Length: 339
Image (cartoon, rainbow, N blue to C red; front, side, top):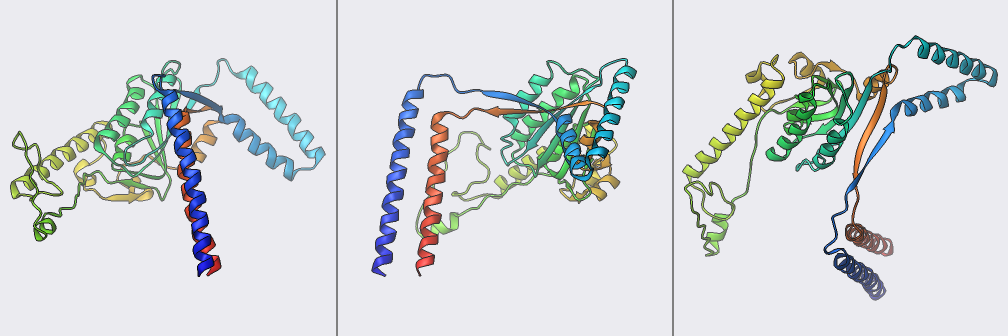
């Protein structure tokens, strides 16, 4: 046991030293960066046609012998040449965006820059495809994300939303803006509702003779609290606010999806893709891969991603976090091995 204690102490000292060095470097980076402009980002553009073409060619190379492959390439070259001659105008463009939503809709910052960029070039002949994955989150955050997508509709550019896994609550608020919503058969769709919950520990505090003073200016500045004593009047006002938000949510969805029987689907329930299609929450059952590979046959497909540049301080912070985690995991595994 003495050996284990000494070994644990050595690992702890080593981890502490590493963390201390990283903290010092982070502080120096912070001082160095004071007064400087915040680091921006960069728009990355990838042509997905080449991606699909490479997948096909790799498979063909693996399945066919040299003679067959040579004949196929010759045939493909003739077909491409014939298609170019037969086309009076350039094929349309498809701009692909991704939104992987957390509770704060943090991906909105990248989305707004991607949309701003594509709106400088896109025309009604083009199409925007959003691959959306989100279970929802804060109302104001997803409201802003949905407003970014509304810019595409307002510009008269066709917007298609593809859902492979989930678009619920705030996620469906975004999805409903699409002129066409495509869902995988088992994707989770819906949850047109509003929820709020918070603990209240007032009775626990009273039990230990701890008083909490909550002072407000304005009758409804505070309705429900975590520490103070909640009143029936406060609960009623809180519920009223939820009902108002829910009605706004319903009106928003109904404006973009007038074919819905909104009161039947705005119950907070969720449905899998097949059932969602029957309720007209989505328009087609398909995966995003199937849809985009099909579009790549007739259009130029571009994936846009706005990548934020992280400052030196942020990178050091991430490294410090990783080092702490690795040190803890390493110490735990070593001790378990020595037991």
